[in-house]
Image (cartoon, rainbow, N blue to C red):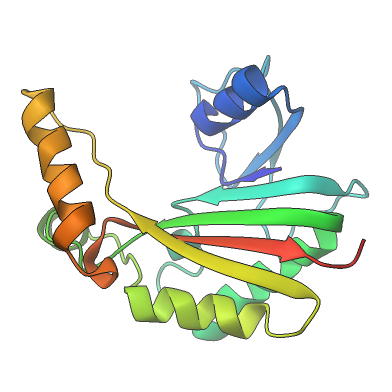
Length: 183
C-alpha cells in the first residue's frame, strides 16, 4: 500500500523492481498516474475504507501534508495509528519524511515553498507516540538525497560529505521502519 501515491513513481518502483502488487491512495488523482503499476483509490489515510491487509505500507513525504493547516500532533498520530488497520500481522510500515532543518530543504522547501516538514525530534517523537507498545519494533535512519540540476558529481560529493560529517538531525530525510511483531 502506497499512502499518498501521487503520480505513482514509488508504486512503479515497488511493482517493477520488487514484484509487489501496489494499492495506492491519495486525496488527489494525479493525471500522470499509470494504473498499470498502481491500483488507485481516491482517499486519505483517515477516511480510506478497505478490507484488504497489506504486507507493506509505504508513505513518502506525505505525513506533513496530513492536517496541513493546523499540523496537529493528535491528527498525525491518528493517521499513523490508522495504518495499523491495513497492516497484516508481521507486516512492515516504512515512512520517509523530509527534514525541516536540512540546510538545503529549509530555505527552499520550508521558506520558499511553504512545506511544513517536520524536525528530526518531532518526527521521532511522533513515531514513538504512535507505535509505543511491545507489538512493534521501530528502527530509525536518516539519509541525504536531493534532485539537482547541473553537475551530478558535485552534488553526489555533497551528499557523501553530509552523511559522513553532518549530525543526523540535519540530514535531508528522516526514516522510520516499523515492524509488526504479531505474526
